[in-house]
Image 1 (cartoon, helix red, strand yellow):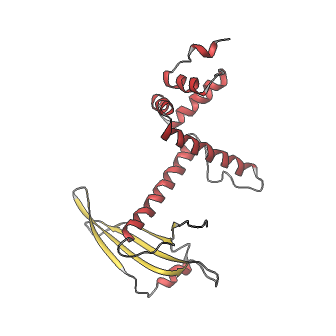
Image 2 (cartoon, rainbow, N blue to C red):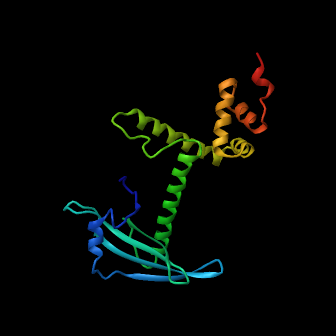
Image 3 (tube, rainbow, N blue to C red):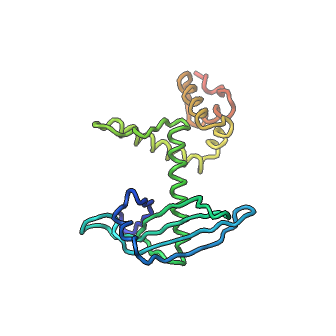
Length: 206
């Protein structure tokens, strides 16, 4: 881990059995909060414990564990998840850390959903294998996604083109079709063509 870096990862009983064995019989601090959700209130229950080993062995990393459980008005548990972190956990910040953990999961799920279903064609086994080509292609895929994300944030003409075309998948299909049959003298003209729906005269000059 880089110097000065921190982590906040999901930790489930099935994958961290040693950690959860330490929780059995331990006095675990708890906190409950009533949260308004629409017209109703739900209960957020938090538990946490400091300095537990993440795995078996003398060289195991010691982490701080926290859990969030959401219970609806009828007493039914609608959500439960737990996390480990190197950050200190207390009643003052356990809710914030749990929210950060949930946000991280949401970002991760939505990112992989985009990469798998929105035109990037990334699959679970993409990047696995005995040789390096698949991993290399997966890396290029992730770099492309990062560049597109930067363009979404910083390039107004790119955003206009995305909005004009519609879905991300359709955007890539149009981009592929245009560059198959036409040579554009600049990236700006290509994006302009995507936005307008027809190539500018400059494409045919010369």
